Image (tube, rainbow, N blue to C red; front, side, top):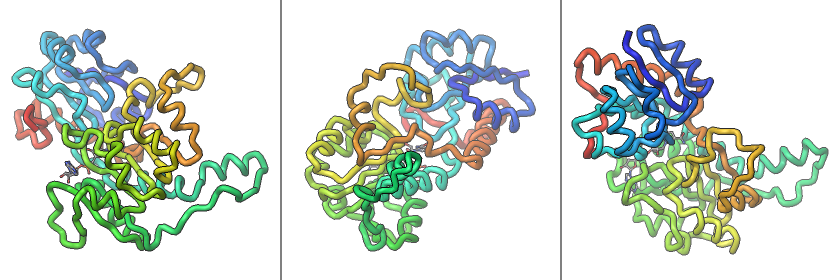
Length: 327
Ligand code: NAI
């Protein structure tokens, strides 16, 4: 029976993969994949990894030496892989789409929660504080949403925004072939938007797409939503803008230094990351722990497609979900 070493395994991963798996010996490990623990993959043909596993050249070389043939990413993004190091050593397969609805709906949930101050309201009513002071939001209807990245998730989010009666503008170097989106330059999007939502991948071009210069162009009331990747935003610039009231607020499902914090319970630890400590303490910031993908439908699809990718690899079929080193 072919073996898969499954890193960064959480109970929900195990539940959905065990349901979908009929053929393989899956060895679940709670630790994240990194150069120091590759030995756990000894005897395995495949390694299954996730967004914050450390898949640098060292990890790849060690896996290759152990005889691992394929890296099964159970996610869409692959910015944590040293792709060039994998050339000729490991095949990389991913799940390009599992539920754009999951992430887009979470983005809208964050936007509503931030704008209408729902987390603060719930904290108050739990303490029998029924005051409304400080909880005023604004109607989304009629406001302008600026969407960066109009791929699968961005387009679902656009439809949701339109359902709310919002005007939508967008920026994407590869515009979608549908003509009901008004594409504008990034600067124009920053200037005109009441809400900015990020739905592009993390690349050299998009790293810190929201920085001091971008923020300087934005409306003082703008709400920024990031469900894509943390490094799309310069967090220090964001914090400084929040402190100076140069933006209205931020809702973040991702954070540039999330790998040491997210997906884990750190509640009894001293968190030394001062930027996130200050961000969470701001009344106009809400943060979730990279949970945009976390719906039953998405977990079901992730397990199915990941195992199908492995089937295809073993049977020598065409690898439709391969990430090529120059992608
Ligand atoms: P996609 O590949 O369908 O769409 C990405 C879009 O971004 C494409 O249209 C592309 O042309 C555009 N883009 C590329 N470079 C750009 C740039 N410089 N400026 C503006 N747009 C640019 O990807 P999909 O499925 O919509 O996912 C988007 C992102 O969402 C992923 O890259 C990933 O980072 C994030 N994601 C987050 C999840 C979460 O749990 N929070 C789960 C899944 C994905």
